[in-house]
Image 1: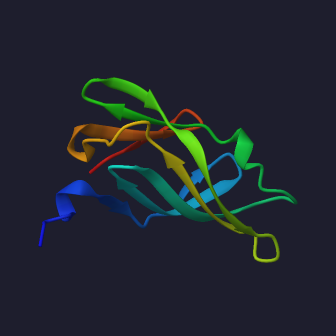
Image 2 (image 1 turned 120 degrees about the horizontal axis):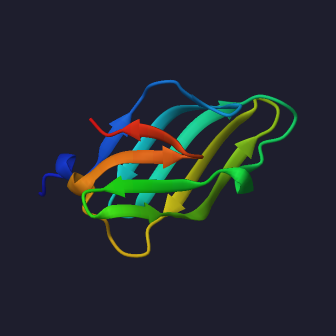
Length: 103
């Protein structure tokens, strides 16, 4: 059995970013998963840019997919890394230029 707590960071705060409310974020070696809700008629996930600030610089993540519930205006989305990530080196998540520090 391995200790995965060092390989993941989890937030359960309400983080507002440009009409989206990121309620739950999970950062792991393979990328970032977010769950939340949105305002307005559409959830334009293609307009969301995600990057990771690390001790080595900034790394942009690629959209991997997800799902949306248009009736409840909620989403579950993920962005992938090109190679496995050292989560301990991540200092912040950047969503549309908004810096969310890793604690």
